[in-house]
Length: 67
Image (cartoon, rainbow, N blue to C red):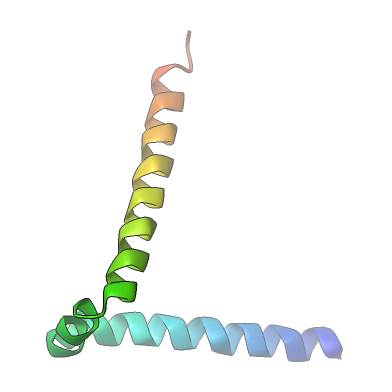
């Protein structure tokens, strides 16, 4: 029973985050307001660096797979 409650909470949290991401994509004015916040810009910058590093690592692994 506890597992179901935790799963429902986690699912609701995830759907809330996805809804907020979609709202940012469809409402550019709200996104412009967020870009004015320095902490948000820093967080986005770090997230983009992390994703780029992960993708570069995957590409490197594919290229060096046969060697």
